[in-house]
Length: 299
Image 1 (tube, rainbow, N blue to C red):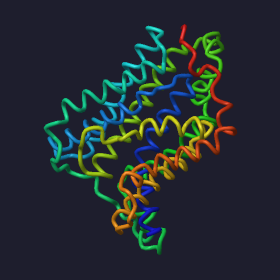
Image 2: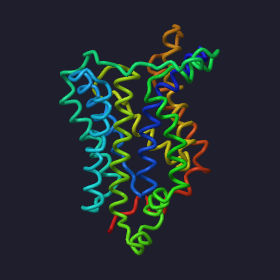
Image 3: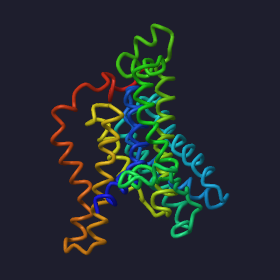
């Protein structure tokens, strides 16, 4: 059962990893985007619909990225140009994404999709235990393995990362040196929304292979919480994402094996796990975020 749980943790955690990396990008630039959940839903539906209608899951993935970024642009306009409250706008954007996907996705419930098939890595996939857990997944899961250290490297070892972090720490300094903080935040929000859409696309076309209303069931909000309590660090964020997904996989395994535990209690297990971990880590992780985070943008 341990092998099945860990395999499920990796496969199911990929969508949260992408959404979390997107939110981390936004927050490093000084903007909280609670619309991540909505972008995930839009990405999931767009990937599913385009994959069905074209027969190409990769076109579906591209559509998912575009849909997530498009919804994030609503957040960008309201926050960066209309100076609206970030938290309130993020919630409204999520409700917008939920409503749109419920409306346009009702005809696609239960339809089969051309899936992103698993790629078993030759040799490595045959390794005992680790082969199944790490080396027999869909290509987007492998991409997430690369994306996490790549984002960490980009944030701390590149000029683009320095500019992004400066937008979150001291936007007025960027303006002095001729770089628009608003432009940097626009790019961060679009990238963040696109990554959330990518996470949604992986969820619908590789992990669950179906579409249902509200299928992300709070994964976007979990991603936002993990970013903050992981100390805005990509590697710790990924660990939190796999922990949450592992709790879901454990819950499914316990149900499948007929454990006499309330179904509702088992379904709450992943969220309770995250809450407990966040509570234990909160004193150490809550401080040290970007200085401009949550402030009204005045540029």
